[in-house]
Image (cartoon, rainbow, N blue to C red; front, side, top):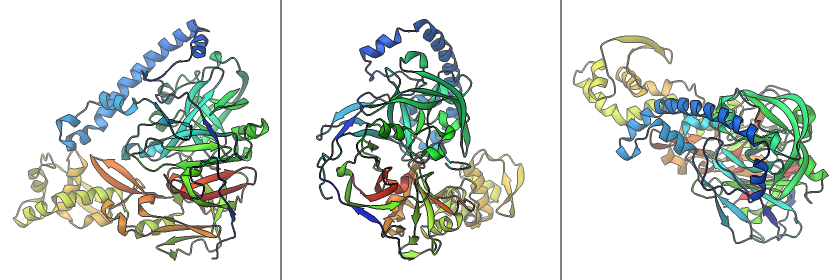
Length: 570
């Protein structure tokens, strides 16, 4: 199919931007010696100090209990990793790992263009926590002139984003007067703003994050209407409140938001962000609350009705990315943006003309496919038929098959030599140190075939026994986790995957559509494509998440109801 016409915008020569100086990276569990407290904040803390001391004492007890619980859980979770690393310097207790995972500080760095940029500490992508980084929506879904400044964007407000596991990007905002700081995901796939409430008493996640305290804000107004926001893997519920919201150096007055009193997503406990700031449309807003962007325009806080995103996929870079309200940073893209109109005023939904593998059409989008451009989704999601075809073309395999082949590669030759020498299969895995075999066996069904499995205490033992009976079994193992691995050493030979948008093709190389994951002290590569089947009339549907947006600088144009893409540069 011939791609539809598109609008091309030329890059103006300059822009001006401001940035919020106050930042808080830590969750509410750990204090930070790097944080500065302003006099106005100190004065506000004197109000209601007695009530706060009682709340803090209660919260402190709860936090200690949860901290103890998580230390035990993490000690168990990380035990295999500690054993496999095999180095004394890398052996940590569960509590130490917990503190190391959460403790970090912010540093301020002045850039040459006059912006104050926030230096960030990044963590490597961890397979065990990748699921926590992916918020799946349920029903209804949720160059030229480089480095110059443009006078056409006098009120561009920049919020620098933090790169969490290369799957979550979040930045700082303030709510209330004086502002209480929160880390939020800037999510174009939803429309509501919510943060944890000080009235959230019975959800574990709330005690690991900053919570909004209405009594500390002189601009708070009560709303009180109850609400619930559903996600694919859970929900949050609470009530609406109204207060001033600070983004960059601008203040949006009387913004209605949700104080979350119940967070049903256990994954939020491990997330690095406190809440979500939706940048979608009012039609998709729970309670039909005007999204924060609407109020920015109504209060004349921005001169251009656009929001631009640059997501940095470089794991070694200090800055995870940036979102700019009312402008763009010309240093982060090259060439012109290709603009396409949105096709549905509920979400940032556009039309994709075709998906190509190594330049060849998959034939799936002959009549055009709908795609939502979503900064709150980490992967590229699409119909199972095409995603399976893509993952097969790039040599991806399921997590169980991947683990099985790891054992084959490491121990296969030794196992085969033992078997040829006449060793009994049940003794082989014990002799090479993978199983603590005590002579009892349990029959299981694997990939439709019956096998005899010993009672080994770990996955390596199980796979060893499988291999001892069927050395060719790995290819037939299922993929219950839905995660697909690729060979990191073969990235250079993998095909380019392209999306036809407007009158251009937007290619993704293997380096761009894969994620690097730490598994048992080893770096492996994960496919950035995941299956999502949406029935008609809404589907079939693609979701272009951070894997795609990391390759292409994106402008969300509220004024003209269009989305623009240009090649991203660091």
